[in-house]
Each structure stands twice: as C-alpha cells, then as structure tokens.
Amino acid sequence: EPEVTQTPSHQVTQMGQEVILRCVPISNHLYFYWYRQILGQKVEFLVSFYNNEISEKSEIFDDQFSVERPDGSNFTLKIRSTKLEDSAMYFCASSDQRVSSTDTQYFGPGTRLTVL
Amino acid sequence: AQTVTQSQPEMSVQEAETVTLSCTYDTSESDYYLFWYKQPPSRQMILVIRQEAYKQQNATENRFSVNFQKAAKSFSLKISDSQLGDAAMYFCAYKEGNDYKLSFGAGTTVTVRA
Image 1 (cartoon, rainbow over the protein chains, first blue to last red):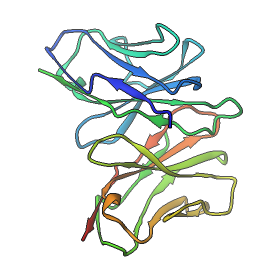
Image 2: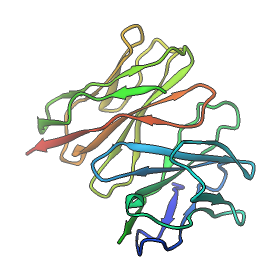
Image 3: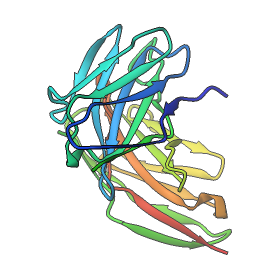
Image 4: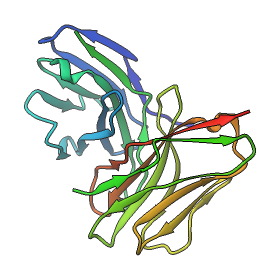
C-alpha cells in the first residue's frame, strides 16, 4: 500500500541554523501539507500546497518557513533560522482531491525536530 | 476558526470490551467532514474513520463506528471488541468542505488492559 515517507526521522540542530525536512508524498496525490505537533499539544496545520504554490497557510507559517516541490517526488519544508520553539514533530501529508475537497489526508511518520 | 474539543484526555478499556471517545466541534458551516485518526507510539497518524456531514448514516469501519449527531455537533468514536493494538492516541479532526486544513482536537489516550 502506498504511503507517505519522511526523512530524517529525527533532526537535531542549533538555534539559528537552517533545516530542511523532506517528504515523499503518495505518488498520484496532488495536494501536500505540513503540520506540526509540539510535545503535549494539538496537531497544528502549517501549510497546504497545490500546483506548485501555497494554497493556504496558517499564522504559524511566517517568513521563516518555506515549502518547495523541487522535483516530481519530493516535498520539502525549510525553516531558515530555527528557534527553540520550533522543536516539534513535523508531519507531512498528501491527498488526491481530484474530484472534490473531501479526500482523506494521509500522513507520514513525522520528523522530530529538536532545536538546541 | 473551528474548534474541536475532546474532553477525555485518557480512557482505559478492558480487552474485548467497548470504549467510546467523545468529540464535539463548533462550526457554522453545513458542508464539512469529520475524521478520527489514530496515533500509536510509533507516532504515525493513521486514518480510522471519516464522516461526511451531509450523510445521515453513521460511518462504520470494522470494529470502529461513529455516532454523528449533527444538530448537537457531536462526533463520538466507538471501539468495539477492543484489542491491545488499539492502544494509541486518538484525534478527532474537522475539515470544511472547500478548505484544505484539518483542525484537530487535543487527543484522547486509550489504554487497553489485558
């Protein structure tokens, strides 16, 4: 069964450093998402991406964040200058939604980002 | 912004018994979708069940079923014949019909006693 994959599983970085989190969505999916979950808190939406542009973003997704689909398979989240409060689990998701906006989002296993 | 509330931080159930997880949501929309996701210790979120708001019939998926009360804005999950593998955090999530993002509740941790 196709699944969303994410690398690395755990990333440790120093405050102020740039990090890139990578995701490979399910191959025939067209919509891609990033969510984050700070330890002990709710899963929060960051951004959705379709047709090579951001379709929606939350207020969390400020200028420090960017997303990119550099090729036909990868979907990346870049944090330019990490802060301590960026420490969280980051989940990538993808969905098909060819017909309507009802389709299910399938999640990857997550990348745990630790900012020291 | 839509609010999803899960009022039970933790629930415990005996193996083979039934447990019901509650979820309420706040919306003024008529076109929306509701989901239950399971997050086991491995942390990957797995879809358990989904419900379209326009459907009156409650969704079922094997041992998992929902009680969708649209007027009350309630969407509870029932796990029947609980198994040890059901132990996980369960998240209720909401999505508007033409929107992209999922809004999640705080989650309910389910433990299954052998």
